[in-house]
Image (cartoon, rainbow, N blue to C red):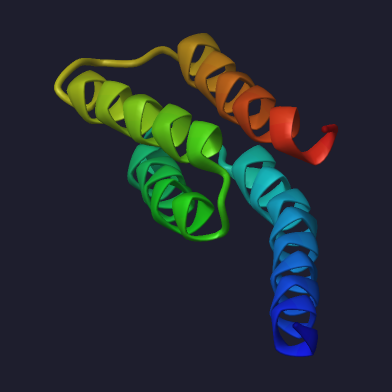
Length: 101
């Protein structure tokens, strides 16, 4: 039983670290400047889609994957600066659902 408690404690610590890392991801997104950074935004979303699921944040994982696919489709079109800024806001809001929970 002590081993199970130890594992649960370690998993909680990993979850805590992951949630703390999300603030860095939000800051990275906010620094993106223009449509030229769309690949960087896609990359951040892709990484979060994978890592969130690993740490038990299934909703974040699914939301990030869905958002990543949306961004990939948008890559085929011309995106205005205001549209790109809205995409950044949307991505941050998805992440913030976890950090504020």
